[in-house]
Length: 395
Ligand code: GDP
Ligand code: MN
Image 1 (spheres, rainbow, N blue to C red):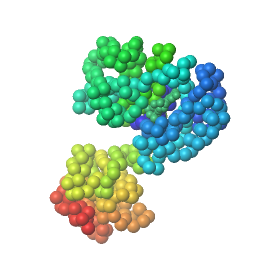
Image 2: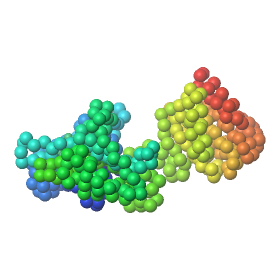
Image 3: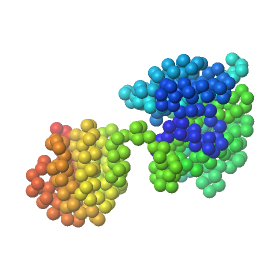
């Protein structure tokens, strides 16, 4: 689950990680109100308006504005709010902005010649190493892909032993490599925040070191492990449904394991392992999976029907493959679910459907599908199914 910058900063703040003072606003009027408070509190001549969307590169897309007056706050936040923000990390359509963060300008200093240096720092779970790692660089501000391409030897990685946690000597080493004095306590707070909220990523980009020796997390991106939300109840409600694939949210409601992908072959499978194998098979047939969908081992008619509806919602699907191995779930139940879908959906299903049902009650299932007279290609084996998919895709 992705968090917005303002949500991430609230978490960091609660772990004593220094973040710029900010107030969230949903309208230009609220933005002005927030700006008044911030101007008064900080006594600075400028502040920053930051569009809150789940995408980086907002600076380049015009979603970050440094402004000097309340008039400007009103004008700029009106321009940003309710409009689509296009950044190098969004689609061409961009992302609709519902909120802006009105934030203290932490770059300002008494001297016009002082520009704080920007650093990069992130903590994330490295699944290959089976460890959390801290990745950091003196070249912050830009996105990390660019940094690693342009300055591959200016990126450092520190591995954290899960049984010891972050050692003080490691924190000191990171500070030394970055040339930042007294970074240790900042890093330890950051690592605590990362662990405590079950994050899989906590990225600070940029991190700055100010003229008065303050270390500040200027921007943050936090991803919380979905599988940990059951024990992270206070963070679970931070999910912004507007930012997520509507199909995936619907799937969640029916306890279907659904991930939207880019391809043209919709698939419905029981079991994650079989779903992975099915996706490989689709690729070897010259197709590309439109989704990952595991309906679970205990799927019933209703769930099959819902899964079917979800796949049909995706306009890029050209053919649907239903690949079920009947173990606990019975093939004839799945067949009933498929047939019901044809009767319950209010428009004709024009997309060809290839079904492979093998296992418990497979004959019964095949008979049901055949006597239904619906345009379904019913097969027993994976080979038959993949041949059929290939044939359909090459037409
Ligand atoms: P991103 O572009 O989505 O990653 O958004 P960031 O929050 O990282 O901001 C992008 C850039 O805006 C930073 O690299 C800074 O150059 C600038 N910026 C962000 N916060 C401030 C601020 O408080 N003051 C000033 N002057 N510039 C800022
Ligand atoms: Mn950033």
